[in-house]
Length: 235
Image (cartoon, rainbow, N blue to C red; front, side, top):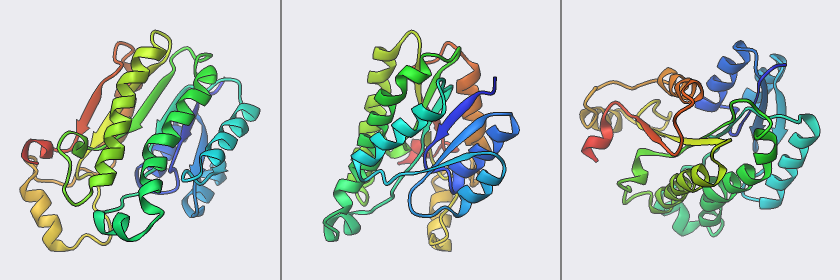
């Protein structure tokens, strides 16, 4: 029987590449997306099951859980990757942005973990991976709400690791400069690289390898692994 995984935010960047990698390994991928289905359509052509949900709406998350329960009795992995990267200006000037930051990064993962735990318990190696951020330990003054919400997810990683043990393992990955956004200018990139000891943009493969490491090491739970080229040493 094929292994199964739910990846949230599967339509772009890390979520998309991880989905492709796990499809290559024979997984049945449930590919969540919010507004843009562009990347998910390519995954669907490879056999992924697309699932739309606006994580700013907790009821939509509950509906997503029910849809997955209708499609499978076993879930082997849950990757909470969906994100909205809003700075202070966006949060202060958009009345819905603050709610969205906490709904997407904290409320939705909580509902997914609690709702899908019965499916994960049926797996022989169930794993939850929460994608947090290196700024959960040293918050950026420019992204206060975002960092606070990611810190909540980091704390939940440890809480659920305690309560879901010994059956379900729960770990986190803290990415650093793995892949710059298109709107990052050269000045920003040079500054970030100067603060990163390994002095290189990591790319997505180190993140994928870390998911595999967490999956294949059955004696890890409640851990947060930085994948950042050492940048957390300098922030």
